[in-house]
Length: 175
Image 1 (cartoon, rainbow, N blue to C red):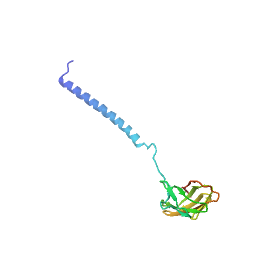
Image 2: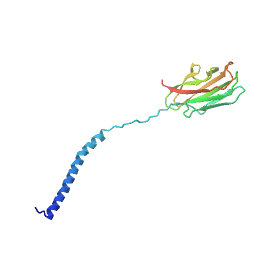
Image 3: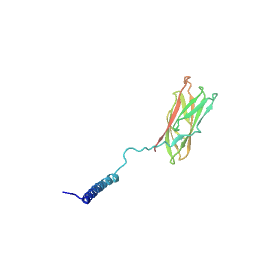
Image 4: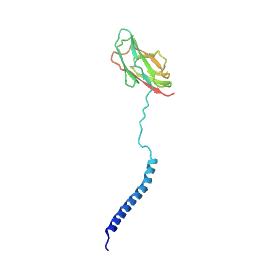
């Protein structure tokens, strides 16, 4: 069977049309499948949320000395939730840590201040807190306000000479 040039050309063209038609049907069939997963997808994994404490120690906090010694330092952590104090003090003297606690939130907040001090140290707050234990106080701060804890500390007569760490932290509580 002899095929003319015209028939060969027509066969090639028909083959090309057939290939394009098959490819088009594959694309059309796959198109509907791609839409389903895209429309019904969900976010997987985790998303980070940071909640910060609204009550922090203000930079205006300081130590005032009463007596012959005048060496004292008060440091706070970066978050403003804990402090460490160092004071040169003699038996019979006292000093006061004036801790200004600022409320950064727009709601009234309650907190507990826990302090670590040597057993031979008397501590009393002249501010607006309620003492819950030897070294634990409960207090509240109005929205955007400041509450001062004025912790007067004095060593008992039986406190042995030495270096003692005095530190504390403020923990915001609900209610």
